Amino acid sequence: MKKFRFASTILSVLIAIGCFTSMASLVDYELSKEYDLSEYGVPVTVAAPEGAEVKTGMVNGEIDGLHIYSADVIKDRFRLMASMWDFEPEESLQEALATQKGITEENEDFQGYVLEEENGYISKSIADGEVDYDFCYILQKGDRHIQFGIAFTITAFTEAEIKTIYNAAKTAY
Image 1: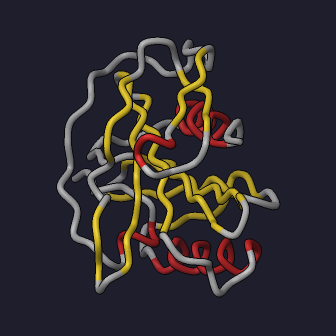
Image 2: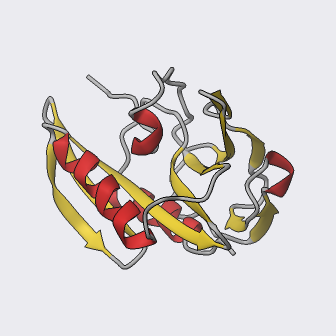
């Protein structure tokens, strides 16, 4: 059984609806074009494959008077989500990342980390015998944290595919 996937901060607030993706391989994708996400309220530019579609993310909206902005950059199985709350975070970047790791580790299917860096990580899980990978990357920009993860899907990703998307998140500026 496949599971819903999206940035875990938002998971704690919203219920997700999954969407299917085509089966094109991400491993061959080059991060050859820059996409400006500021039109969607997320003040970053990020590299992604040529021909990707940029659209308002499913988690864009207001919750209890606080606005969250999100943008999805999608091409086939390449599914990058960038999100940002419209308020100054109370946590440092390292504390925010530690919070996200705690949420990831609460998942009963969590098997460990395959990559841990200062601003992000890639995690591995196994559910119903199916191996899946996920990631979180947080960028400090001005007085905001911009969090990157997988845009909505029920698709499982290989380690190589997640590394491609994670590396795209790391190009954000």
